Amino acid sequence: MQATIIIPTYNRANILKECLGKLLKQNFVKNEFEIIVVDDGSTDETREVISEFEKKSKVPFKALHQKNQGQGIARNYALRYASGKIVVFIGDDILVLPDFVKQHVQYHRRFNKQNEAVLGFVGWDPRLEITPFMDWLANGSSVMGKFGGHQFAFEKLEGKTKADYNFFYTSNISLKRSILKRHPFDSRFSSYGWEDIELGYRLTKKENLILHYNPRAVGYHYHPMDENSLKDRMKMIGKSAHLINKKYPELNKVPSIFKKFVFVLLSNPISLSVFKKIRDISNGKYCTLYYYALSKKYFLEGLKETA
Image 1: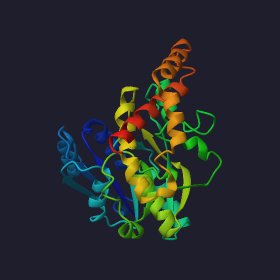
Image 2: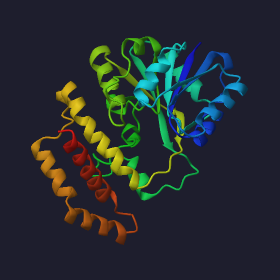
Image 3: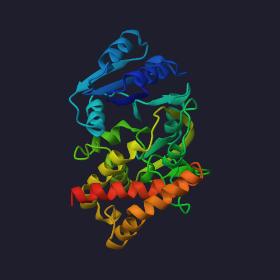
């Protein structure tokens, strides 16, 4: 078995169905890759979607179910049943191109050391209307060419062939199964925010991880988002910052007093009001400072809750 595709899912039955359908259309030998879906305690029609797919799939398929515990724990559960030489992680809202599996496998044949991994490209699904907020969310360089949204930052990899642990995106990444056996996801990071980056950094420290970037391994992200989604995500990141800071203080994920002061200045009601006004007057053209400041407001709230 060449590859195992692992997909944790939670209450996204409709898009999961499309995600699995794309994997059926891979131009790769059907019995040389398998799919493992972990239902992380869904309460919608996810179980029915998985059952239907299991019946018609011509690709080896495993369906696992657990109570809601988070993506990291779900991936560890799936790893116990994986038999592929490489493991590919994608999200349940990632729609891959027909040569997706082949692109990952070919790169691993080329880079076959145990500590070599492959990062694929993720972009918004072409069917989505990309709002200024979504554009900011997937651009890590929109503020001063260095800061920006927290979803993706693939623009920083243009022209590059390798990435560091900050790009350990589990929406489209593959590693040798042998290294994941020794280094599973840390179950303490059960909420959104750090479980992927933590593993990427741990592998870098302990295994000298080399993360190759293959922009031809494409997955499209079908997940419309608006400003309302920012609060919960950034608060979770803030809450988890203390945990990763305790484990790796050298990363400085809990900001210094000076940095907190800057964040407070940026995100106080007056500043936010000014940035919002600029965004509205420009019809979203100049929105980056507003969204960045708003994200820091929620991040500080989460940070304070677990201080």
